[in-house]
Length: 223
Ligand code: SF4
Image (cartoon, rainbow, N blue to C red):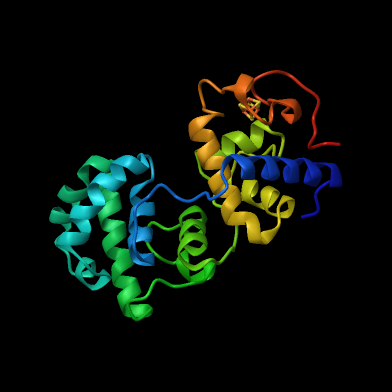
C-alpha cells in the first residue's frame, strides 16, 4: 500500500527521534534460543514481561527442550505458568506448538511467517517478535497494544485491527528497521506515551504529534 510522502517523512522523523532515546532497543523478555523466545512471547499475552520472566526459568528447567515440552503433562504445565493468566489456553498452545515443531520442523522453530502462523497460539504479532529478534528476519511489524495506541495517536494509522495497522505501518519505515520500530513503540508506550497518562510535556515527539484520541486535531494521515 502506498502512503503519502508527508506521512512517510513524519514516520521517519519519529523513528529518528526514538532511535536517540533507545539506541539499542531490545525485548524485555528473557530468552536464550528461538524456542524460549517463542514460549515467552506466547506467555506474554495479557501479561507483563516481568511476570513472564519470573515463570520461564522454572518452565525451562522442568522441560529444557522443545521435545520435553511436547511430552509434558498438561496439568503440570498449567500449574507452572498459572500466574501469567489464561494458563489453560497458553499451556495447551505451547504443548501443541512444541508437538508441531517436533513433528514438522525437526525440532527447530520455523523461520518463515507462513510456517510460524501454523503453530498453535501464534498469530502475526508473536511470529514477528520471534522472526525479528531470534533470526533477524523482518517479515512485518509486531503490533501489540502499545504499538496500536501510539501509531494512532501519532497519526500513522486510523485502523483498529492489528493486521491492518501493520499493513499501514510497514510502508512507512525501512524494512531493516521494522524490528526496531516495534521496540521503540513498545518501550515508548511503557515509559512515556502510556495509555492513561501520556507524558506529553517531556515527550520528544510533542511538536509533531497530532495526539489523536487525546485532543481534536487536523488529520496528517489524510494529507
Ligand atoms: S506528545 Fe503525548 S500523545 Fe504524542 S507521542 Fe508524545 S506522549 Fe504520546
